[in-house]
Length: 233
Image 1 (tube, rainbow, N blue to C red):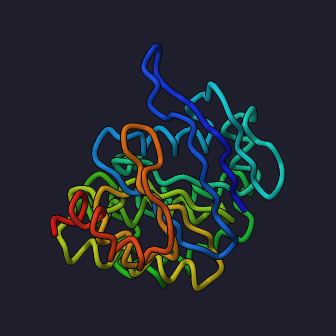
Image 2: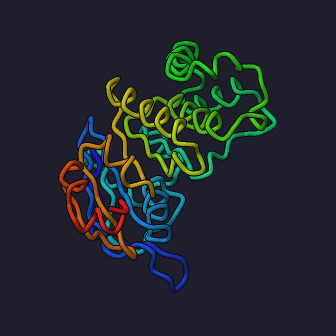
């Protein structure tokens, strides 16, 4: 579904992503883990089109989308849940969700809403509450739900566990597994390597803009180098 070939991207003279190769098959959960500042978010932003690339290419379902604008990538059913949630604070939960269906002109919004409310019941209970008044975990659920309202084939998740208590991290990751079971393909960027690899099919480890390790997620969890550097073991 997604193929990244020799991708480079950066900010001015700083090259944050340096010749990265990644592939994501349909129906997989693939995770990219690494330390803060390793290039994870830059790579995700490059996929969604909000960060320019300086080399390489991005293929989605066989089409080169490297030069497409962000809204054109959304139209091809790629949705990103940004780092830090970025919900529309003054609006209600339901209004935030409905905005996620903008590219579909609101088509089938009621069906999509019910699907999201079934995954995140707390959002349904508070559907008329102002989004800015939600807890961090609830805002993360809302950001994911808003992305799902666009009907994505590929869901890009940027640090969904950031700043959340362990019990909320577990809830978010369980929701990711539900999404995959319902047919979504997920590319998950995480600093919490253990949590991310625990639910993924495959994983990549990025260090200073380059892929250092890759493989089956279970194998990476058992790799002594990964355990020492990223799992605190």
